Image: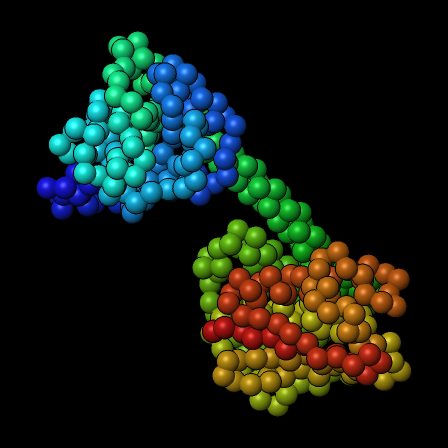
Length: 394
């Protein structure tokens, strides 16, 4: 059996070793002084011309650090010609006192081409027990390490693994800090979405309360409507919470009559100056009604906000059935080409608006659709109006 051959019984273990090696993210990385310092010290202690930190991939022996021989230009060699392939199969020091007369190595191309006589290496053993590579010393003269040199080389090999672990933990900490920053940003945006999407029902409740004060005869009617708006607010909060938690599966799908949903939404928005036109044939679908309502509420509110013409109109309907795609069109100020995708930025303020014209509504729409596997786009002519299209996955 060749020295580099991996027994069939060890194939799964070798796959796990490679996985452990990859988890450090160090293969093919740039040289680093902290590793070069260790190889310099190894050569000094052992009195050898060359020292290396190597990592054994599935088909190559890659050099993280090379010290002592400027003629070595390669950053890697094939696994099957390396001394280190044997080192990682053992449990301690692998030493070749004179490779030129060693029966296993004397005909090796690496021995002949580089005139290598001496090799000694310790495996770099991860905390999981996998041998990732070696710390080794090489010379062109036969030699043998003393006991103290062997112990020192082993200690340095352990130090290499400790540095690996520190770098890995540092990278993991940076990843978690990035995730935390993303979570904080998401929570901030969630707070803005809640405030934005609850303005409409709150305004409706306020209007009903004012009417109730001056129309005592219909108090019960106003109270019933107020209660329905409050209930819908609670459902919207649940939907936005599920969205914020990336857990849309927690939302129950229900039978949604899109026309009834839009009629109720338009009544709640309560903008009498706008002429609404709904398609005659709007579907009845099984879906997360509260999320669909949030999408329509934001798009319709956006259309109303930017309708600055004398005869403001909003048209809503189905653009196509496969995939199911809705549209919301207005005859408002339109969107300039320069705005582009910036309109979906939660911090953008569109032209010609002095109020809170930020894009939190469109941001909410886009992010919900993306999370559900849908998409949104628009067609607009400045001064003539805008049509938003969105694909709704059922």
